[in-house]
Image (tube, rainbow, N blue to C red; front, side, top):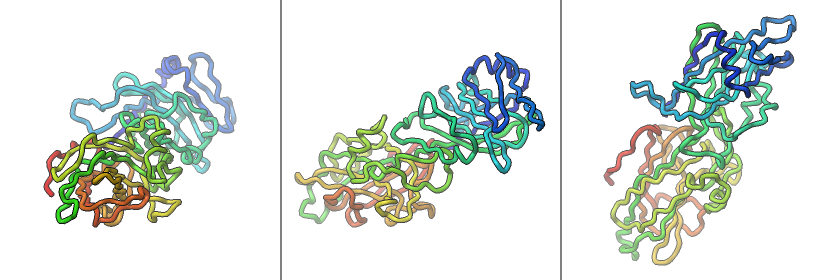
Length: 364
């Protein structure tokens, strides 16, 4: 699900009305000092350096693939916009929280020059104390919280280097931090077992070892941080999350030899762990159910070892969908924190963009 933001340099003459519409706009410089005078232009006090005159930048936000109609898929909301000086210190030039207006645009203010722009769409809190964000390094250390996420409106972020000047436009690719674990189909194949005619009953699925924190502007490696459900059971995340359906679902039916298409979508932050240890556990999809009255678990390492590494990539990447078609062949394990082997369950794994419609028919 590729998302783009286009930044178009607006006219400085429209800054007056912008500041009236956005009373929360704030400009910061260190060590220089910025003052507001009603709805007048914002000027930097004379420090003997370059002019502190502020120019308006119009950001046109596009989320998802364009369909030729100019629609972006956004539904309003707000964006936090940070602009940093692109020099050795990379100190903050400006920060504003701005409402997304008609045409999915926001108007941000900054000075001319080489800049690093960071945009956060769908921030997780109504207000933040950004006083500690004094530089690009500061925001690089900021975390988002899975427990506050909403899969229907996920936090998205993007970063780009620009040279801010008159009549300029720039693209900023933005993505959610979330990835989707899509259980497309499931069936049992107990042929040749003493319980050949049995079904998996009282079935539910959930994620375990789910990173609860992820750096907002990370694009590369995601180290496990404060994982939820590290005991292999679902209750930690269920009790702490604003939207627990992101990590837990009931199938509400038994599973036999006929293929069932539950099309369950669960969500998590990325996980780049290379070793499954207590400190760096792999994120797992856990299928739980009863066979002949006994509870069994099928904890599946997502895109790891015998269950994946699709395209040469290991683990869970950012803004990816992992599609699983599952065949259960044996009774599972009794410890939900023990990864199941390929002898007990067969997985067909694929990846695709979030905005691709999944197929509803497959062949085993």
